[in-house]
Amino acid sequence: MWSQSRTASKPPNPTRNEVAKVIIQSIALRTPSRRITNDWIVQRIREENRNHPERAVSSYCGVIQRLLERAGAETRYFRDRENGERGFDLLIDAIRSALSDAALAQNEIDLIIYCGVGRGFLEPANAVFVANALGMTCDSFDVNEGCMSWVRSLQVAYNLLAMQTYSNILIVNAEFNVYENGLPSIFRIRSSDQIKYTFPALTIGEAATATIVCKSSRHWQFRFRSAPAFASLCNLPLPGYEEFCQPDFRVGLNGAHQLVSFGSELSKTATREMVAFIRETYQDLSAIDLWFPHLASEADFRAPARSLGLDGRLRTDAFRRYGNLVSASIPAGMVLAEKQGLLKRGSRIVLCPATAGMAFGLIEGEY
Image (cartoon, rainbow, N blue to C red; front, side, top):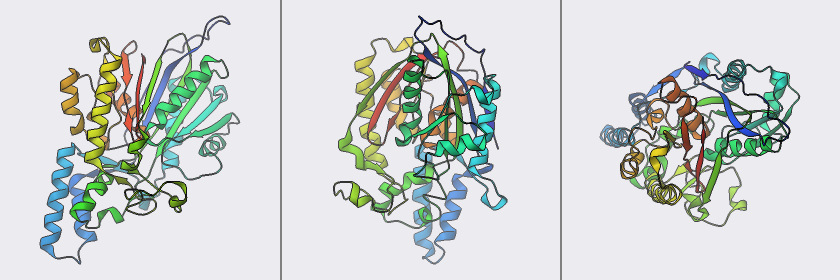
């Protein structure tokens, strides 16, 4: 298990006349112990399709290998379920680390927000199980907007802190999805048409993050755009999803609890919309030290980074190490950047996720 967390001096509480603004006080990341390589993925495909002709299997594996390399995928981490490794335990460990780094006791947390796709319950809120496991009685609720969930939770926390409803908020996610929404069916041979919307599932990794945000005088800006016409380009449906949407041939192509993601079309749309969003919002991009996108591929960001002059400041290397971590993607990228000495207190940053839905965000603030 690899872990990293960061700390900063605890900010003073604002005076009664001062508007409270959010500061990210600590972030902790936990990944499972099984290190998964592209070669492991390809080998599993061979094993799951041993009854197919060898020539067909070899050809298919060659296609998958090239797609993984083109995306920039190298490793990701899965739970070692055979030895009892559980995502919930990793999450609790991340929370304790974040609390320690923030110099906060559990009873100083006023609110827990659980976010992301990985979840065990539709009801009640997953956050209440986290609170109960830690012996906490604070308010708890969930925020569900797929890969955008952590950023939306940050926005919710920001507004609640500004209203002085709470003083210290804990945002958590447990993006453990590969067994529940993928393996082993994603290893079965697909047609060339099916690969178009099934391959992205092979880049998914697993992780838990815990983020503590507190009152501060620092100001953040939250800007969002939505393009719901592209919603079906990426979907992970529940049983009976047909009752909750208009008919669309792209929804549920792999069945319930299986990811459908038209990676190429999704990437082109996200790149076009996000580049336009950035150009319209910022006149001077040099004023931003680091940019943190949601990462479903590293290759997708190379061209837009060059066109915007962001080479080296758009942090995409977390995908290489961890794969697509869903809502944990941005906090994991921030932890990695700090470990590398790139992200520091006082850095001007922009979180710039483009996610399923489709939704686009530009969240700017001082770290």
